[in-house]
Image (cartoon, rainbow, N blue to C red; front, side):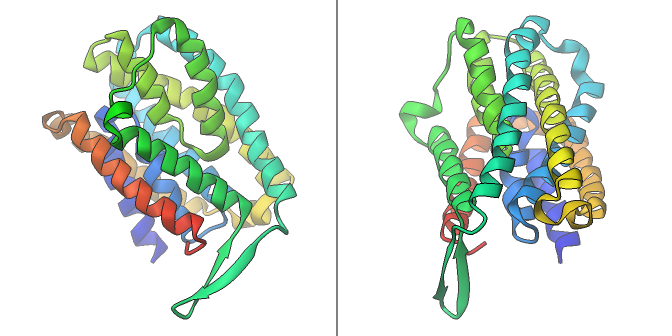
Length: 264
């Protein structure tokens, strides 16, 4: 089942996120969490997300705004290391803190990490849905702050794109530069957090260690996400970012409710 559901989610999320600059990790991580522990799901999402951004860079990377990459991307890298390590610490200290209940014959387990990630997802969904927040933009002088926030949440849960896009869209770059800059910065954050995930999972043994990492599923999902980029490059310009934001937010909110309730 996971060899169908996860690559399909990677393809759809990649297609939806091509022009919006966010949504792939947001939608893919909860699907992976249906089949694997959260730390592993976040790490596998980072592999797919990073590969997806790398492919975008190959296609349009030369159009990236260098000033934005430096002023936003460098703080994001530093914060991504901190966020990824925070995930390891949170997993370690909250391992025994959980409660369960039975709903319609199914045992639901709520852990602090699940609850925290659910709150984060609901927060990002609110940003995309609420009229007062949906058009939220930030001045260029706040780019380093945006990089720190986006990078930290990217390292902690993989939710970096929505906040990053909210900052970058204010800079009045062209659509091509927006996509390219988003991809370059996203890949920088992905690379930073993958280094920490590799250390905490493969060397420290988080969530089953190397034997618990779904390498084959991640590889198939990478291929599916690349296919989404190829199709998105040709057709998705006909879809507005507003539509993508609303769809992503609705799916994100629903998944967050199920995750926070311990049903996934």
